[in-house]
Image (cartoon, rainbow, N blue to C red; front, side, top):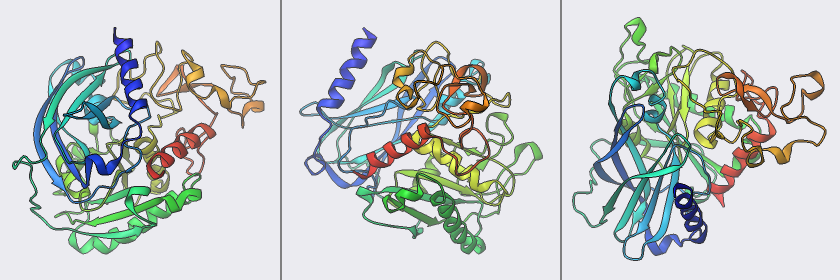
Length: 423
């Protein structure tokens, strides 16, 4: 029954893939803030508030998500006709937390956001979470009348945005908004310079440099009271604008924020598809979650690599290809099913991954021998574990500290995502 239901979703998505934007939407954003509550095995949704925002940065052509990435999916239907008019897949900090030891011991609530182009008529939102077999299970639905006078339009603070690298109209570009974290009012010039520098890091790398004309990058001038970020283990607490902190899930280098509403409010001052938080710090760290947000520090000697690596996560849902015990997750990847990430496989269904890129003379699994050093194959070790999960090549930007080194599989995933936003 579950598989049939999922198939129905896929068929519906295909049938209504060509929705005319102007028939259903205005050129602005409806932001849906909600609470996601649960533990390691359960999750529940509840609405927080609805907010009208002035810009729509997304595509006006590809309104239906064609990717099977992310732990969550929201389907938006025109309520009067039940036509599917918009959908997106994404992941969040909550679903990562569900795989930690703490989630087996307690219940927590996270703030999350779903954005859609502002509807002209009443819409019905259906929220789906994945189960242990990665099947999408409907958890919550909610109707929104766009004429509801409780939809907030106020802008309590005013921040200026600036162009970092803008090449055209947002509807046909990948729009990235860079948010400053831990930059004081006296450091706004430094932030602007850092934003330019980090845009250069991105466009130094293939396949981004070949597609520079398909990107817009914006910055928002939003100062913090203090310089830096929180480091809880060192009893360092800074008054910063999005409340970021190292030691997320008690991992020293994992630098994230739970303050989703602050992040989304700052992002709304520019059209955006992707949010990147640039943290004014020298300490090594960062993080990213697909279609949620990405984070990097400004002044570490590996900042260029971290920026590009984390954007691979946030933009194209690329998985980590390295092996480590320094993670908070327990059983993050099941070897009984295929990972959602396009660059990891358990070989359960290798045909659905990158088998088409493997030469006939390359064995699967592929031994880490010299003769296969520059070959696409299936090399064991990835997704943090040494066995059972396989990566496409012996090395890649998603594996080691090597900036301009995306493997062909990762490049393909990135290019497909660029095209999706810019067609």
